[in-house]
Image 1: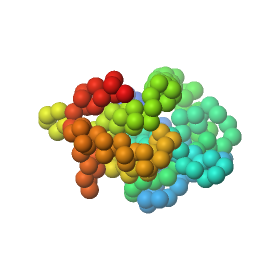
Image 2 (image 1 turned 135 degrees about the horizontal axis):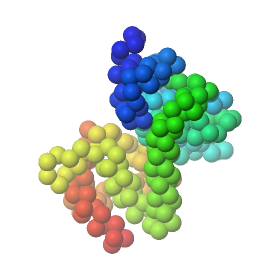
Image 3 (image 1 turned 180 degrees about the vertical axis):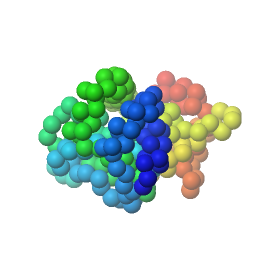
Length: 232
């Protein structure tokens, strides 16, 4: 891939949007791109932590497995996101698996090279800290959801969160999730069973709060869904 396309890819990554052309050129010198097929792992939990990744196109599922092999989805990342967020400050191994959910093109940079850039351009480090701060707040919110709500409420909170990250407003109150998630994937995001998620979504459908179809999930009215959470 030529330098100009790589430069445009880097410009589209939120962390790099405000960089000057000369700063972007420095990034281009240490970055390369690679496309992965669905189901491919770019790293596995426990692999040596040597590279950091930025998503140009596609979706990446970050998940952990316990000693019994049960999957717990940590996050689903999309265009413009970076991972792993602790990669610049934590030596050792990757804390989770990273699997392509669809054909995905990644920008790949060695951690040691990126750490040098953060020292060279402190403003980039500040942007990185902001992104990490947002991730910490998100994790805190998820913990509060598990503490304060039963499983029914946790599913509702998950749908509200996904509508903010992957939702497309259809011009009225309806919000369409632009990414398709199976009930199994939704269950793995909050540590419950597929059957529990299925029952909850069916209950929400009966209340005309959500609709489902072959192309994904539609939230009829996010505000009404939020009100339903208050009644849990």
